[in-house]
Length: 374
Image (tube, rainbow, N blue to C red):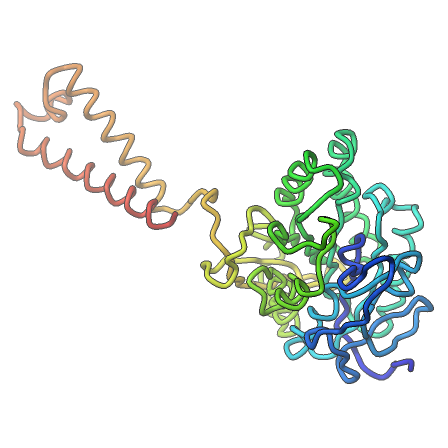
C-alpha cells in the first residue's frame, strides 16, 4: 500500500550488511522472527521501497534494496519504534548493501548515486533529519584500504551534504564491532571514532553480541540495544539528532557563525550518565545561505577526559602556577625574599610569605577544579 498523505521525518539508512540487517539469517535464509521492538506501525513508520514508493515499513527493511543477499532484522525498525513518539511520522530510506567497501560509495559510483536519488525522491514526502551510516568491515582487508578510509569517508559526508543541498546534515556513524581481518579493525575504528567533522557523531559498537560468523549483529542485539541507535539505548547518540530536529522545529535563533562544539571523538557507552555537552549547529532545513541561522542543542554524553579547558579559571590557575614557580626560583637563586628582590622593602618576610601563600592557594584551587572536571 502506497502512503502519500503524511509529512515524514526522514532518516537515510546506509552502509553495508549490519545496517541492511542480518539478524535471524542462517544458511542464506531469514527465520522470519520479528521481535516486538521491530513491530510494524502502520500509522507512524514508513519506508521508501525500491520503486521509490512509500509503504508501511516492516522487517526486513532492505529486502528489495540489498536484494542479492538474505536480509533479516537490522537497526532501522527498532530505532524508528524507539523515536517515533518524539519525532512523529517517520520515513525510512533504506540504501545499505552488504559486502560493500567505502570506495563503492564514492560520487559517481552506482551505490552513491542511487542513495542520492532515493534521498531526493523521499524529500517529496518530508524533511531529511539524518544519515545513519554503518560501514567499514569490507575495508579491513589491507593496509592500503585502511590508509584510504579516512579521506574517502570525509569525502562521502561532504558529497552527500552537497548533493542534497543540506550542508549541516547530521551523520550518525557506527564504529565497527567486527571486521574481516582483525588486525585492521582497530585502525578503521580509530578513524571512525576520531572523525572530526561538524554534526558527525559516532556510536561505538565494540563489545556488542555477534553471530557465529563473528561479523554480523544478532536479532537479540537489535532488540536489547534498540538497534544500538534508538533513544532508550545506553549506546545511543542519536539523541543528538533528535535534539537538533526539536530545536529546528522551534526555530531557535543564534548567531550565524555558531557551530558544533564537539563532534564524534571518544563517545563512550555511558550516554545516559554523562554531563551536558553543548552543541551548536545550523538548522538542517535552511536551504539558502541568507536564511541560515543556528540552534543551540544540549546533549547528554560521557564527558571526554581528553577535553582541555579554556575558561578564565583555567588560565588564572595556569598563571598562578607559573607565578609560584617563578617566585620560588627567584628566592632560591638570590637567597632573598620575593619583594626584597624588587627593592620594595628591607625585607618583609611576612608580606612575602603572604604573597607566596596566595599563589599556593590559587594553585590548589586550580588543581582541585581540574581534578573535579576529569
